[in-house]
Length: 342
Image (cartoon, rainbow, N blue to C red):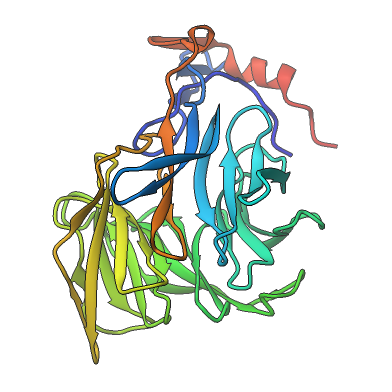
């Protein structure tokens, strides 16, 4: 089971990873270097193309990865401080339901029928839980290379996710799933969709299941691309000046994404046979969203507004920072603070 060994460690605004490193040290007792800080606080807002925003959850917390349910009446979100784990916000009743309590649970993905959520767990792998919190989570797959879920195919038979490879970096795979409406679905053998020397991330099935949008750093910066699914076929670049975390509109032929400076862009597109034709990206909103983590927005099923995370100023007592702290004799510290396995 995970154990907390050190709190108040800053996380990266680019990757969401914690700012620390560890070495054996000259005497072999271990050294841990880290940047002190607290989890970035955000609030959840509804944001339209005119820049109008309305609080969905104004209470500042360390929220991450907001995702609308298929019907648009609920919002799944990860919480990275305090009551950590996955939560579901009932937008009509303003009711918050806790699904998990494991620190580090993140990247919730709704099943097409809205009854279940797949997510990345710090327990290693991808897990599955009822969206009403009425049953305990269970593991869908174990992956020592990590497993970050991003999107279900419209029929619920495939889950697109990213996994790491020491030679090719982040790659996109799909997991066959039988019985996605069940509390205990059967999974098949994972299948690669895209493996290159570049890093591929944030895969998203189109509403009709014919296309896969994703981000890749093959050009040197992360950009958004589209390929046919399951392939083979051509690829089309959608973003023009950096982009990540693509989201398809379910109500029209539009694709939204985050820019590298955390703004929202929208691209209209057309399809003719096997050809995908993206239009010119346009600004979805002038509001800059949170720089914390990798997934800070989702497009509502009606295509009219976004759920976004907006960073909030730190409270005076939370303004820890700066400098690098070094913990000596780290291995001895671990023996004292981490329970031994029985």
